[in-house]
Image (cartoon, rainbow, N blue to C red):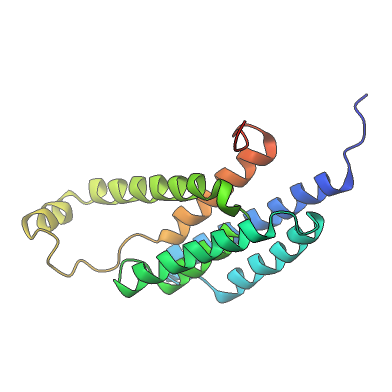
Length: 172
């Protein structure tokens, strides 16, 4: 018989489970309505308050730095019309759970997912892809991919990966 799991560990699983639900909600909303609800971002911020409480503030500076970095870079991408405001808010709020030590993994998982989505989108509409290639991206091709999905997948993969141990912790 295994020893009982301490309450903080159970709380981490519960919080990550709820965070997963919120990220899925944001992703579905982004696919359907092309908007990420502010309520989902606020829910993530609320979950982070509980997360930081269970951690007793350990790593808070790193977590705030990660969110700040993502927000500043994201704002630049928003200003260049590369990302939407909802994407930037969702990415920054989720980065709070990563801290600077897991931020590169989160960014990489998000970019890989977004790239895969873009490839699938282009492959599913080859005529559109050919027009885009011929115009060298200078036309109006509508909205891009719903990046809330990529952010959600990146966050879920990294958080569950570290929580369950199939992604090694930094420095391990």
